Length: 94
Image 1 (tube, rainbow, N blue to C red):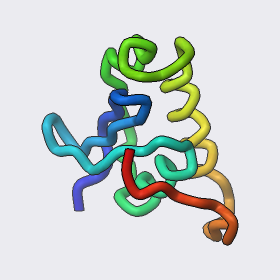
Image 2: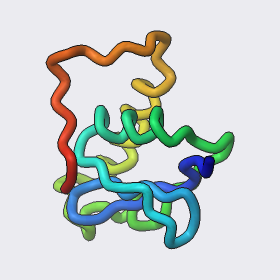
Image 3: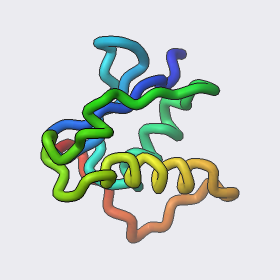
């Protein structure tokens, strides 16, 4: 199974890719991004496209907020524990 290797930004969401042009999906919250990481796995080395650096041009309100969302999702992904709280709402699309 292919694992997540790239993160991008667009429409205020984080785009997730297995490879160039091979999009896994979109995430609007760190929780949804962590869910995609858990269900698809991530490679040992991941990359962010330049739109993550310039995220205000891609629908994010503040500079750095796309990278902060990826960091928050990685914290959730690396969290010791596999259960998801029942009250966590995961959006299906952006």
